[in-house]
Length: 371
Image (cartoon, rainbow, N blue to C red; front, side, top):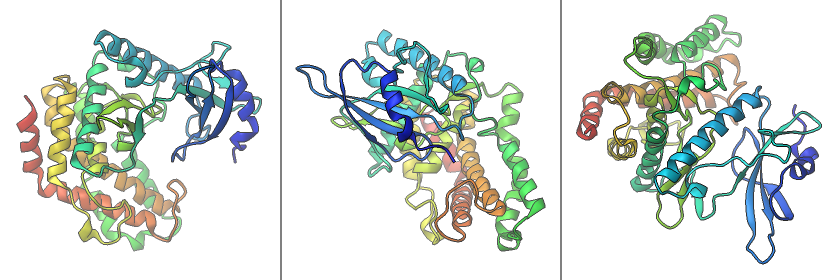
């Protein structure tokens, strides 16, 4: 188990020049991967300035040097794009504050890797969208992310988590877990297992299109949930994409699809009453319109064609991951009750079924906004 971050917090605080005396540092946010602190400083005759200090998870990210090269490269590129377009660089893109040593991050005496970002004031981070307008605002923000990075050489980025959205690899891992059935749980989920096996060919749809050159490799965020967009408190617009740890080469349709999986329904992820789990076509419509508006024509015609596939496959992949973890003993996704991962799997598969039932409508919605 990793050492508590507080043991080396003071080391990290002393490694960075915050431009003013540090008057406090407290645990911050709802994240479960990295150790995050909000650092308060007090400049003379000015209001308090805040920073986000994080110890990167050694379990999730074994190569912090590669992780930070990705983030610095992308954030500096975004900064240039924002300045060139007359935007506010300090609010519209994350910025890495390097340690006093000049390195990309600080390594403490226990081997922990730390980084700092200036806090973006006047924003809020939401865990769920209370209105369609907020969901759409996140879509515009993620669309702009694609638009601004359209010419960034994706193949220069490191793959920070190998095979993260590789549906073929996820299928392979599922089959291995099923074959082993180490805890004799397969008998509890025969219908869910068959659901995956009936859609085995789907796992190759987008990856085959990539291999054949139909879909381009892009810089993708790979975790496009609402809580990874900072919303302006005054306008309600999404102004800054955060949590760039999974930013790496990928498919734009997957970024679109993961947002739909997360946001275009009203149920809890582990809802046991599947009658409450439904794809909301009006939310799909609102997000699609906003996302494509943000993209500003950056996507190819083929990418537009495959957007519904992105939604279906990201949802299917997530359900398959929950099912795999259930078969293996719930060692990856934290659970608080028996069968929780199986319930999570079932909600995702219900959404997939809904998408399949409304497939023509999903494509019609994309066609409506593709111009």
